[in-house]
Image (cartoon, rainbow, N blue to C red; front, side, top):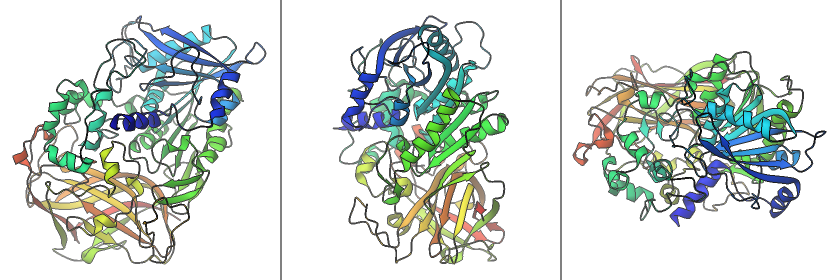
Length: 628
């Protein structure tokens, strides 16, 4: 059963196959010709590539290429086996493109050695210095010469890990590459997916067989299928009983990615060279970065990718799209659009596919390509008013920075505290960690689809969770832009984590909507999480050079929560919760400083009392951007 769940999750992440009308496969067979190639790279390695060409392509009817490069398999393999879908959406499939799918190095039917987040080589010397950019250049060059009836233009897209390949491939500098759309792209594994601000995403322990076992030779089959751990009876209990992270070594002592992870606990050269963001310079073609506001896997990636390209390449066509979606969910229509319990409207994915994505690719690959798409630079969904909004840039230039201050008595407001010697405290026990969700089934899998908008009432009643909230709002308040947590803390230990959550508290009069899948949910008084992030105190001054906390000393812990666009409506409240564990999504801090938490002993895990200060000379707050 676990393997089936994992396989389904990977399929969803890579967006290769999902529920589509049976007629789509028949449409593809009727309208596309399939061809399989092994394309040689400059160093002699051959990458397996499948090309689907419209049957009506001719000298008079030429089509552009639309390509996805992936580590998740380009199945189905075989000249007479067709997928149930082509391209990013069924709309583009019927628009007709020459769709290209490629297994990257060391994966499935491609030759070579696999590496995670292939380091980019900016100044290559000789044919043996290769990366995703060079592989993309060589692939495009081969396609242009060997696939007839193409119009000389190439676009690319990918979701999640394929989103990283889209970003890395955009650096190929091939003149035929006209449009790239990295969607939920991984940007940096120390801040995305496997870590958040260096905190290990423990729920991902299930994924290491996928990423940490080399395939012995090109194959159409999974070679890691017998390596998965069976978490029993549920993910929370299993992980708690596992004890320290070092105990996972019993499963992964031969897993190269696990060994790389545990031997590089800090942001050292190993992780730094896998960060694609510093290389996003000199980009000349059009970019559209796409993400979901409730993407539990890759939210840092799309936001920082867009902002980095904007900063380093100010004159190119560069746009950002953020919808009310979990990971990759904009690529499939569900009709009534929900994330967890929250209803956002109907056919939201279809709106994106037809009015944004299709316009982008058609313009740059089939149309004028002059950048006059009619689309704004930022097309973002307000998750409070539940409407699409358009902005000339992001963050919005007119946004006003304000501080939401923590106050005595669990209050939250825009006025700075005037009290002296004022703080809230809690005892954090790593042996009794706060669960990140009430959904034990979700904890058993590795992909936490729902928690990003989940009701937080289960946490607000715990003594190891601090709660601050505003009075009832007398008018709408829109937070749009970046959020920075600026905590003033002290602890009896020598290390600690701080998990901060921004929450929309619904009025007691709210009625349940008609599309709730769980009829036991009560939306009255719902505490909807809007944004959250975790920070490991040892990294407060440097992610590469950690340092312990000094017990009982007031210390600044500053870190960014990812952007929001959310209107807190009149009659609602704004709440902030602070806690030190969110288990088993994130690993537990021993709270005793050790050099490498991956190698900590059970005896290193200790209780600690944490204080969060709200006094005139030590005022904890969230720095937010308010839109009027």
